[in-house]
Image 1 (cartoon, rainbow, N blue to C red):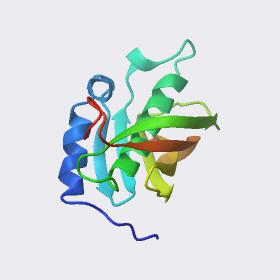
Image 2: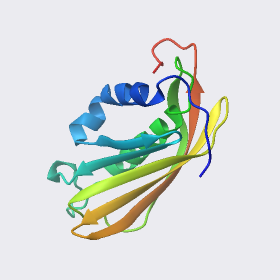
Image 3: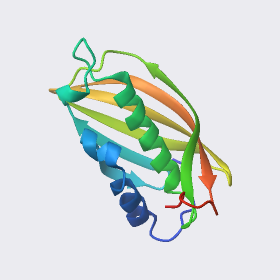
Image 4: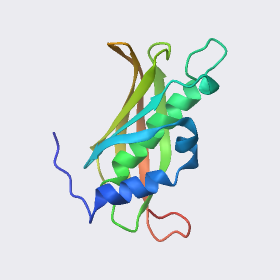
Length: 150
């Protein structure tokens, strides 16, 4: 496991910023845990976010993985910085069927301007977790821009 430099109370700052995301709140997505360069999210199954076959919609999965990746990067940013996604690629490995879903993201390579991340989505159905999607994403560290801070 890589060791990363953090700034101030990165955990409290990350949780406070995440709590301001209405989209995540509306989908029932919450932070389960975080560490420098890593973040774990979860959400219960909600029929309101399914596609026509009853699987969790790929857009919801992508949003959750993007958010997990962004906040994994955010844990390493200076206190007055914000994060924006500049590129992402999602791959779907299996139908998103489960009672709940977990999203884990980690920083692969931090930088002063760009941070490279990856995320994994897992469906939990009883005792059988199953990987359903993967994402790679590039995050931009934003400093000194009005409206884009922690």
